[in-house]
Amino acid sequence: MITLTTQPVAPLLDRLLAEAALLRPETSPVFAGLAERGEQLMRSKSGHVELYSQLKDYPLPVSRDTGLLLYMLARSFEATSIIEFGTSFGISTLFLAAALRDNGGGRLITTEFEASKVARARKHLAEGGLLELVEIREGDALQTLDRDLPETIDLVLLDGAKPLYRDILALLENRLSAGAFIVADNADYSAEYLAYVRSPANGYLSVPFGDEVELSMRIGEPEHGKGRS
Image 1: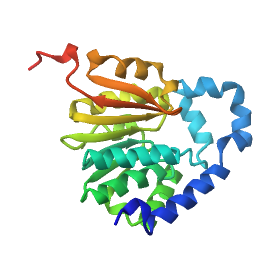
Image 2: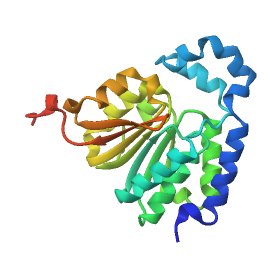
Image 3: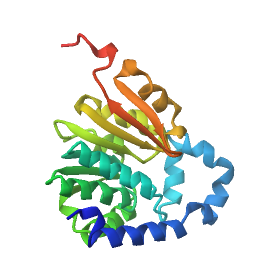
């Protein structure tokens, strides 16, 4: 039995992805009002709060293909500890938690600053029978992911505010296991992040995957960190 392709997760994901396809932010009057500044807000380390707060009723999910990629990476690496930045409605969380279930268990820590989205995600995870594998932390990820992390982290999904990707990675970096994967959705909005993971001197191999994702693998300690006690 594969959790991802059987009851109750498979029909739940089908429903949520179909709903998300109809509830796109481009159709929102709020989004139209922000259109002129949207690009700027997406790239701003402060302005993104305004943008995402305005779009709190929209799921903003990963694509099904990206969700399948997450599941397959987690299964192939036999991941038991996963970090997700940006829970939203919990669609990507379902893909990741399904992989943990099929790996025999583990812990998924996910973080979201919008309380209403936390409630939705919790409901969806309970409906999928996966809530027990997931710890949802509500608040600013720079604070929620700065404490009580697993000794080692096998997989990271970055799908929150794009300008914070580099800062979030910095919080997790010393716990990444050798060969750990980092999946960054819409990373083209964070030039700082891309420059960092695309430099082998920083301990990563990285490549664009499809039109939306930057896929990176931890290959070693950054050169600037060698020799430290």
